[in-house]
Length: 233
Image 1 (cartoon, helix red, strand yellow):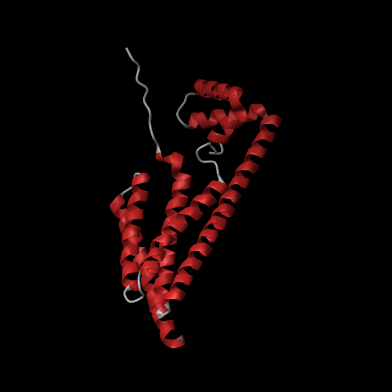
Image 2: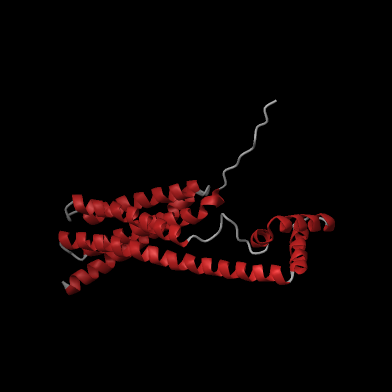
């Protein structure tokens, strides 16, 4: 008889880059669209709209990359400090660390004898990894990766920003605000659906959420552009 192995594909293994990518694409699309709409309603020239869109793409992508790198680097520093402290504790008080790990497994439902046996065997195999995963919650899946997060955010932002920017490059300014608004909302809804599908969440709820806030953001940008365009130009 051929034995079939059960395999599973869990979302948690890609939550880091998924979060950064979805956030970056949404931010790139929404912020660039809002910027373009603001300049259009302020009666800016086609050249100024293009420059604003390109500048928004570059500045936004760099900002997303820098912000994500700094944020995730802080997480990585905290993880490294915790692991260093745990290594010292394992060296100075291994019996106490064994009791600590045993107590963790007892809270999860194992009896006293089995909890001690599991803790003892896992620490014999790799004490630091056992404590990192079960005491600190640090694993290979969840470990902070600053460079990966920064690159994913910058690329995703650029892809999102390119969508409204492309419309600016191929259209005149006459109906640009309406076209960019409608197209951006459709793209936002699509991103919401994609993100929800990858994360196995409710796709309709996600699409409604991003389009709702996208409408508000672009609406405010249009109002501000119209006000400043009337009084300053």
